[in-house]
Amino acid sequence: MESMKILAMDEKENELTITYETHDVALFELVVSRLNQEKGVEATYIKEHPLVPKVVLTIRGKDPKKSLEKVIKKLEKEFK
Image (cartoon, rainbow, N blue to C red):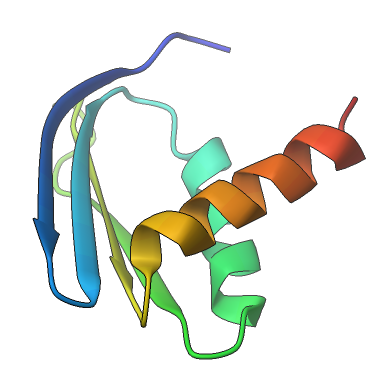
């Protein structure tokens, strides 16, 4: 798996947007799928152009940062 770099993070009330430098969207598909299974959470990602290494992840909910941390911890346990 290629490395990812966070280019920007924008935190608003009930919304978190993180922009990553990467071409790989497989991880985002998994994370967004798991986030959308959480109650009260809505997540999406956008890969604007296949040749541009940029993916934007947006999470909406009561505490989007906490929701992301929770899902990542679950995935770490699952794939250990």
